[in-house]
Amino acid sequence: MKNSLITVVTLLLISAGVNAQTWKIDPNHASIMFNAKHSGISFVNGRFMEFEATVEGGTPQDFTGAKVAFTAQVGSVSTGAEGRDKHLKTADFFDMENHPTISFVSQSFTKTGDNMYKVVGDLTMRGNTKQVELVAQHIGSTKTRDGRNSVGFQLTGSVDRNEFGVSGAAGSVAPIIEIVCNVEMSEQK
Image (tube, rainbow, N blue to C red; front, side, top):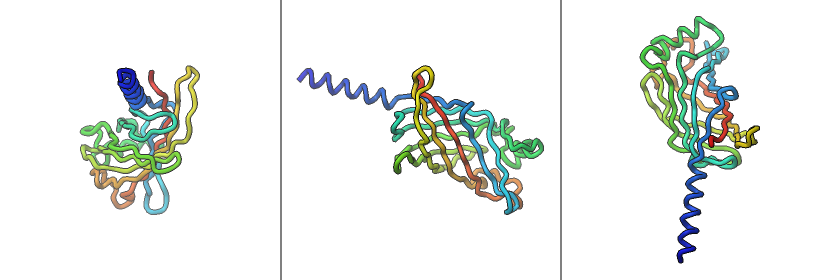
């Protein structure tokens, strides 16, 4: 009986250790990008150059139940046009003075198929928080030079910018914004 109890406790501790794995995003091999339809005829894309993100839980093979959190600095927005970038930081769009960050905290990370997941969470922009759903594709796994596990994901989805109060240039910029995040992350020991 005592050996069975020790075995059960050991298995629980091992399971808890696997689920508690912390992953850190490598900002040199990751990006948070967006695409906005302009005047109904083309797309303007941009990205946030400064961000931090962590993932808690998951293994190189399965991220079911993982927790994701990220914060992007609005001041780092870059579309390749300095004037547009300045305008995006104003109260017409992101209102950087009052809301310097954009954040996301996941509520669920559910496997939907081979290497595919649905990530549901709270996105906050301009002080407005709305639940969004992203599709996450597990691109692959490898080992780093120092022997740690490293994995890659691409997350995609869309948001209605007006729901967050990011409603400047309503006549020329479509309300639906596409999001594409490419992520490479390594386990932290």
